[in-house]
Length: 98
Image (tube, one colour):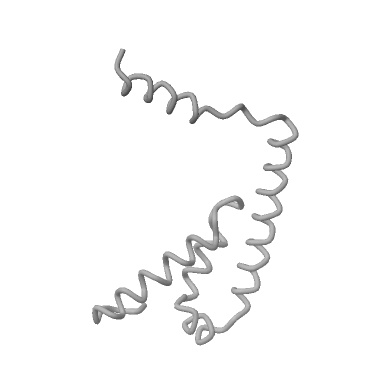
C-alpha cells in the first residue's frame, strides 16, 4: 500500500463527526424557532414603513409581502438581501427598479 492510500483513509476518518445528542437537537430546534420568531417580528416592522423608507433600503412593498406570505421558518433576511441586491444590479445596468 502506498502512502497516498493511507492518507485518504485518515482524511475520511477525520471528517466523521458523532451524531448530535438529543439535547443538541432540542437546543438547535429552539434556536431555529426563536430565530424565525425574531425574523417574523422584524418583517412585520418592515411592513409598517412607507415605500420611500423601504426604497432607501433597496426594497419594495412586494418584497416584504413575499416574505410575509412565505413559510414561517424561511430565512427572511436572506430573501430580502437577495431582492435588494438584484434590484441594485438592475439599477446599475440601467434596468427597471420596480
